Length: 179
Image (cartoon, rainbow, N blue to C red; front, side, top):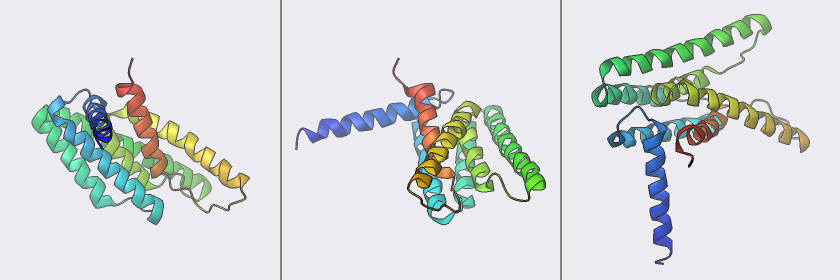
């Protein structure tokens, strides 16, 4: 049993360091905000995987927590800037979806994914969100290819779980990967 405890200590240390380094503009004392946002994003991605809906209240409570914590720990102009970038990211995704809808009469992007991205941008910034979308898209394409190989008929691909995996990979790549 004593051999197991150091392993848990290593995991807890890695998780703490990951949370501290994932948001370099925030003080290390606010590591809990990163953990909270990752829990909210993971939970909403899990809900999306099973219900095809990203829960609005969960995402907006996370957005409120991010903005309030950034305002208290750093400054209110800092929090307002991050919120503005988050809203701009969601608006861009909405505009892309609307253009696609007018051209092809079907949605290209779920608005749950746009709200999910808004929370990710508010906490982590634009670059990790770009990584999330890029890596998530590649993983979703691989998933579609694997389903086609085994001749499994997919009606829809719920993208938030792929976004979450992409975000974790992007955060690790950008901030937490050892040199």
